[in-house]
Image (cartoon, rainbow, N blue to C red):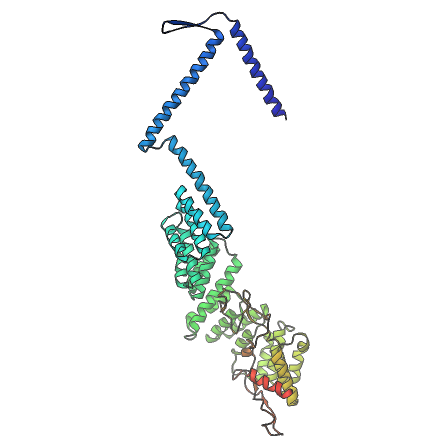
Length: 499
């Protein structure tokens, strides 16, 4: 409001000054005499000022026309002039408008229209680093992979867009399933942009799938240096990679290199169960039993696990069942109320034929946390205490229908694995396996292979067995001689008998 009032006052003041000046000039005597073609013209003071202003305007117009003529001649000669720049600005405006239309069409899912607008923008702008990327993405949207590949290759030739081109071709190879070529392209892309998190993750995943553990550890180190990975997660995944390297060497026997890598994996992540079990076995192979016990106890404090108990049993393979029960107190006293601890204690006491203690170890697990393993142990306890076949088979039938208990489950796709692996077999995700109960019950149990040995002899059909024949559970085997053998067929037969 004040600014508008000020402008009005200034305008009125200027008009007043001009009127005052014109009045003074009209009252002033004298003027200007001009003689042209023998004719004399006399101008007053005011007329002289007006004539001078008109002369200035005419001179300015003449100079402008002269400069336009010169610019036109230079334009026709091919030189850059204001005239050419004027037309260039027009082309630039049209080009950027076409580029904006292409972006809008791409965002709207109109691939063909986006390609047409991008081609129009290229004609006006002549900047392929801007339009080629739009063309490639629009071609992918319409399914024209050949044109997209050609466009990405053009981007690779320009040093400003080389990374974009390499990344685009890498993603195409991934969609085609050519992981080997995609891995090489990911390595090239990472060399161009070491801080690009998506490329880091893609390369790490591809290296893990190809079991290139050394390259994966280098990529993991790059993620730590560039700040895209927290240090605690880095230690965990580096331990997984070290453990994976050790597992590869394990196929040829427990070599010194395998032992050292297993110990390194456990040092990097003491709570990683497979690393702790493998490191303990490496210490056992070296005759370092105390070191193996220390490793397993530390891992058991973090998470009781059947693999740890199995490795702990290997420390003294020739001990009796009673000696084993006593020695395992080093583990069972750490988390006495944990489900795994109670199941382990029950298994040990069954092998030692102390069935009342085995029943006390299970306690209320049958009611609070029932699973196939607990029901199987109850079948063994009932048989050991002399229960009838119908009771034993009833427990086995319940084991068939019960959940399998904790297993190695992928956090990404929820696929269940019998053994731990660094990469999920289904979704190929890296370091996503966790020891937990699956969402849906599986037919096979990962824990069965780790249960301390019980021999359940075949449950024969009563119609084929003599009336006085008993089904015997042999629990005199030592824990390292065999493992529980309860197949789905055995349990189905038991359920049929119960019915």
